[in-house]
Image (tube, rainbow, N blue to C red; front, side):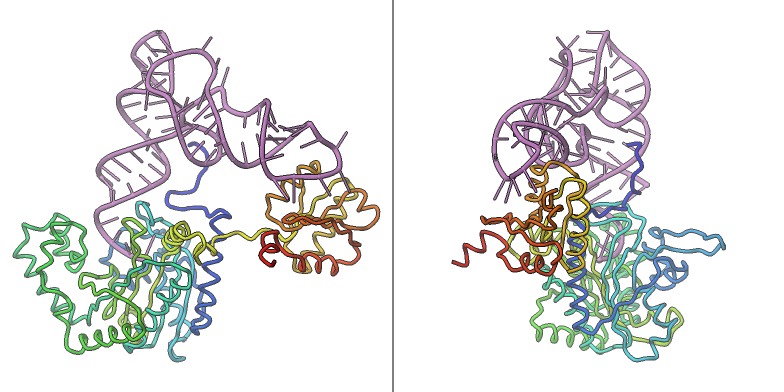
Length: 441
RNA sequence: GCGGGCGUCGCCAAGUGGUUAAGGCAGCGGCUUGUGGCGCCGCUAUUCGGGGGUUCGAAUCCCCUCGCUCGCCCCA
């Protein structure tokens, strides 16, 4: 292909897709409104330092996946690889942290320079929630429920919630030492990657996909066992509250998230429909982040869900159950009326009619082809519109429009163009399809 | 960054060395120049991602290159 095309890992969303996106976004917006979570929009571009300090210098995201460049003022800028750091920065910058607890959501593109594969792109989109200034176990569960219920509202099924506690920084430090000592003694049984990580990021070895390593790890000390009594009790409370809400979960002591700022509760929601990148939603508590970015010590918890992955799951669900909620979400809405028109005078009149009907709130498709009536009716039929509004030279000359039902038997009705309200009434009053009118009997 | 698979019309797709590169969908035109949903007829790739090579002859074999895709890594 010598033709111009989008950059690797950057995808276009065509109408078939944007329909679904809009449906998901609408459900999410309403979901957040009811939960008292308000939207925040932050820039896509931030100073590189924000992510370096926030996410952690040692992480893969910061180390090798950021889209960074120098702007004309020689400042190092980075296309955001995730949303949390920006939200925290914005909250600090505008003094939101001095106004009590904040519950914020965001949606938008994120950028990571990685090799694309199923469920992974270089520009991808997240919907996320950040709850700032809350520390209780209950707030963890409220946040998790927010994610879980949103997915349920979308009609996604077969998801699995996995949770773990990463404890406090002190807990992790103790555990790290313990784990490294244990693994060090079995170094020769580890795969090459894991041996490397023994020094760089030993906790990450826990979720290695190497089978031999996994088998070895079965007997390794767990983070859970290393938790301080306070941390352990806190985590027990989180689990009790999840039970109380009837939200099923699985304990996964190997779950360690890839960003440095997580502590205590960490969770992931996964789907078996996704291939290697199975996580639809991931999040956790990040009590240290605000302070690390120079703000007041502020406990916080948040999560982000991947739009592309969610859509993949949704499409699978729609395929499996064509009548289900997920399928409803992806359907397109046909116009309410299709305007068939031909002839110079008629075309001008049709444009006016189209406009006034649209202003009256009707979804109108105007045939702009000037083709033969037969052709236009074919298109009208395909559009799925229940009505055709026909304007030819005759109608134009006598100032009327001919309304013809397309989905059921029945004669045309002629109405004066001067009375759009009457036209709207007809369009809205009649049965939408022959199927429905049969059901009514 | 490293592996595997693939690249024929807008989409799906047959073709695996031999005269003109199937077919389906969509699109366009016609049967039907003011009335649709069905049907029928016709049109739409001098060309097989790009570049070299082998051969009398290549979409079909070889090399390079680009792209897509799946996986590793990592994560949403």
